[in-house]
Image (cartoon, rainbow, N blue to C red):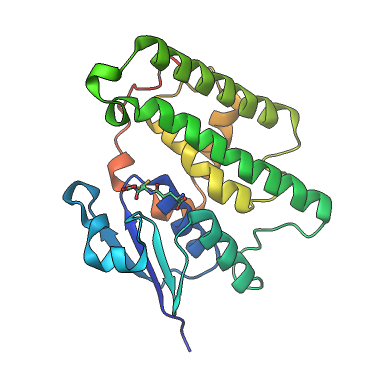
Length: 223
Ligand SMILES: N[C@@H](CCC(=O)N[C@@H](CS)C(=O)NCC(=O)O)C(=O)O
């Protein structure tokens, strides 16, 4: 019997994208996809609030189970469908440790990206400071240089080694977001190479946000 899987998601949300990628990787493309509009505040609708009291997306339902944290939803799908679709977790403890190490580090990357991108949106006008903006941008640059170093020094070609894993599912959306916002491929050549390779993967290509198909943003061009 087919499982009932429902994903509420919003365009441009990297946490939502993670779950969309995991569903495709596990061969579960038949899920019920509910695309909501952030600009219309649909993520605060009664339907979502009943499932996710924070009114955030992704909101994810598997039969009667509700899993609203994107990483938890991806890990659940990998565990529940261990032998279906692509295996996203290495078997050895050492490789697994590496994968989880990178996966959780990826949350820091997402946070530092957010501190730059959403600064004006989050900080009221009278409280904004150029020095804070500069500090956030420098912190993001240092974080991205760290990832550039990982990609340069390690065996690759994926985030945690030779195979595409949950670490890629979680981190790729942040890297794609950075390039979409104008991150310079010449300054981060290894990340750019990784990005260009992974963007062709069917699970990623299929779920790419339509709003991200134009490539003219320059928010991060000086990072
Ligand atoms: N930790 C959550 C974060 C989810 C999240 O922050 N979603 C954003 C969209 S990217 C959202 O719904 N924001 C609306 C709000 O917080 O009111 C996850 O990874 O699933």
